[in-house]
Length: 368
Image (cartoon, rainbow, N blue to C red; front, top):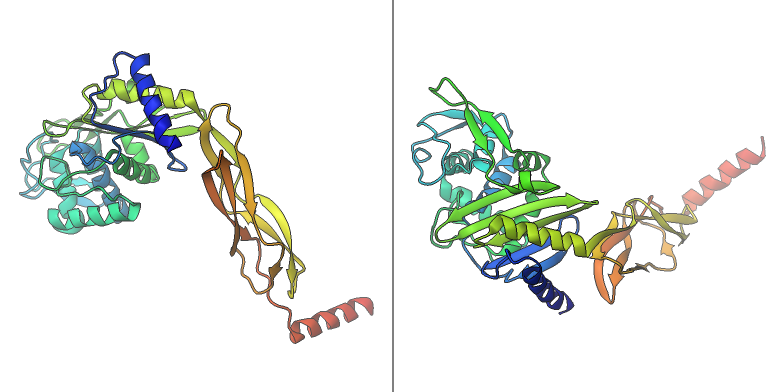
C-alpha cells in the first residue's frame, strides 16, 4: 500500500514538475535492474498492445537458442512483411548477429519473421516459445501472437511484464551491446553498399547514462518504449505504453526516480557473516557465507536495517553451499532484499572410523 501511495504521489509530482509530461500515457513502470524492485507504477497491470517492443522477446529467444554466426535465410514469408523493414530479398542470407541488429536498430519486421522461422521452423512455433519464456519470467498478463508486434489478435502485455522481459534480456551481454548501439552497418545483397541501421531510440543520444532498449509504434498501440539508464551505480529499466511524448515522458520518469532513490549496498557476496558451532562433526565450526550481494534501491536519506535469521548451531552432515538461513534488508517493515546464507564447506558427521583415524594421526604426531 505504501508503494502504491508513493507511486501515485510521485506520478502527480512529475506532472506538476514538468509541464511537458502529460497524464495521457496509458501505462508506465520503472524498476531497479538488480532487484527488480518497482519504484514507480501507473496502470502497470493493464493489458495493452506493445507494437515493436515485442522484439525484445524475439531477440532474447534467438540469443538463447542460436549462435551469432548461424546463417539465417529470408523465406517467402519474411519477404515483404508490412511496416518497418530492412528490405530482405527472398533467399537472402545474413548471420544471426546481423539479423539481430536489423531487428533491434531498424526494427525490421521482416527480420523478425526470418529469425522466428530459423529458430523454431514457423512463426506459430516461435510464438509458443515466446509465451513459454514469458511464463518462466513471471509474466502473467502477456501473450504473444507475432514476433514483430504488428496488430494481431491476442497480442498484448502489461508495462510491468514488459519491464520484466527487458530486465531478463539485459542480463545477456550481447543483447545489451546491440540495444545500446546507435548506428551499425550490415551487408545488403545485390547492392554495392551496405545497409545503414540507425537506432530509433533517441534516448541513446539525449539522455545521460542511457543503455537502450526498444521503441515501438502502431496506431493501435500508440508510442511504446522500453528504456534503461544507469547513474551512480543504479540501473533503472522502464516502460511507457501508448505514450504520445514517449521520449520526454521516459526522461522525466528516469530523472525523478534517480532523484528520489539511491542504491544502498549493505554487504557483497561471499562475505562471512557468522561462524557457527557444529555438533557431531569432523569440524567444530563452519563459516556462513552470503550467497549474493545485499543491495537495494532506497529513498534517499532512508536508513534500512539488516536482519539475520540463523540457527544457534548446526548438526554435522551438510554439504558446502547448503542454505541454512537468510539475510534481509528491511525498511519500515518492508523487505527490500533477501539473500540466502550458506555453508562455506562440507562437514561430515563424526563416526567411529573418523574418530579412530584422528586418534592414530594425533598419536603419530605426538610420537615424532
